[in-house]
Amino acid sequence: MRSHDVLLSSPRALIFDMDGVICHTMPYHMKAWEVYVERTPELRGQVDLGQLRQMGGKRNAELLPELLGRSPSTEEVQRWGAGKEAVFRELLAPHLQLLPGLLCFLNAAKARGYRLGVGTSACAANVELVLSCEGVGAFFDTVVMEQDVQRGKPDPECYLLVAQRLGVPPQQCVVFEDAVSGVMAAVRAGMTCWGVLTTEAESALRQAGAEVCIQDFTEAALEELLNSAPTPAIAHTVQPR
Image 1 (tube, helix red, strand yellow):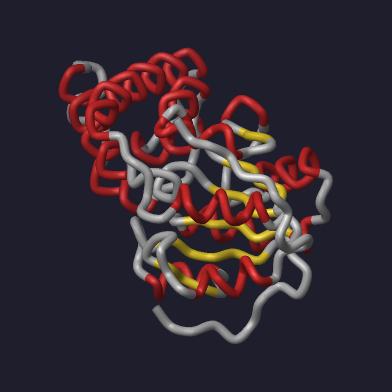
Image 2 (cartoon, helix red, strand yellow):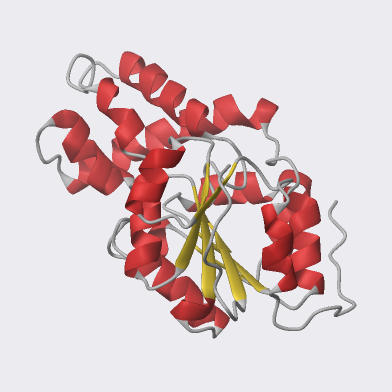
């Protein structure tokens, strides 16, 4: 990781993407598409799975037309998307684990007065599964997911809604993102973005606008962010299950 030169002067909220940031789920999304397409005759041979690695952070409604090379009906998007996400949960559940250092970082951020939120393109069932891991969902003041927005990333709607719900101006929010489209969404929302290197190369995330890149939440660079917290030394911690 390269050291950074710019840190938001007065951050008050930390916002986390879910897939690839809270848990390293992207390999399971890839495998789920492969399995679901093979199980679904009407999709077999119609989906360009090679494009998937460039589509992190997008909702199924935006992703499926690109994979198919045509515009599927609303019914098709709902049916195929739900089918694939069910396979994803089957594959992920036995292997679900948080990124290293995340629980400790969230506890420290809470104790220092940060507001915490999640902004994800995932559906409600996926969010419920991932946020059940070690009780991590208890840390977050709000969660914005697929059903809450009209436009997916890289549109900033998701992150702007998180900030609105947290009651924090966008310029005082720091977003953690692993996908190029998510970094672009954060930047377009007027927020500082830290890249998490689970899915994309550092060069790609920095080109999209990430100011800092980390491998996980054990890195020393996070201490500077904690030290910029709005109200240091608040005696408040969350006890994960």
